[in-house]
Length: 96
Image (cartoon, rainbow, N blue to C red; front, side):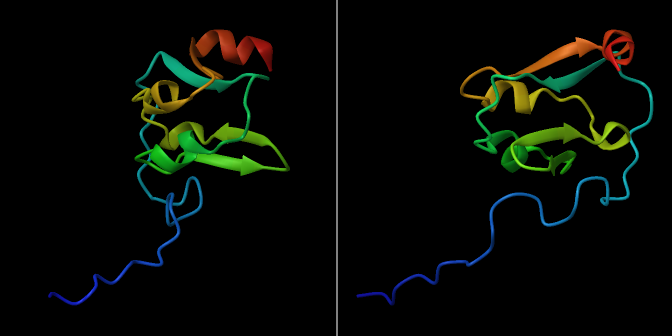
């Protein structure tokens, strides 16, 4: 019988703070993810984000770090309650 496999004790999710990857994507995209009030803070979007561009703010609030998000849409796809939506960039700036 083979010895038991060692289980990694690595914490899931990105291993860096949002925006600290050093890869600035720039301004080439026309849409970006926005978190709506339907968010249940399950953190699946944060876990699956390939760029670590989702930041946890306060309690129960998520934000994307704009220059590091490449707008791949993975966060939109993995959200079980469809709380993440892609909106035109100009529309988001108009709401701020």
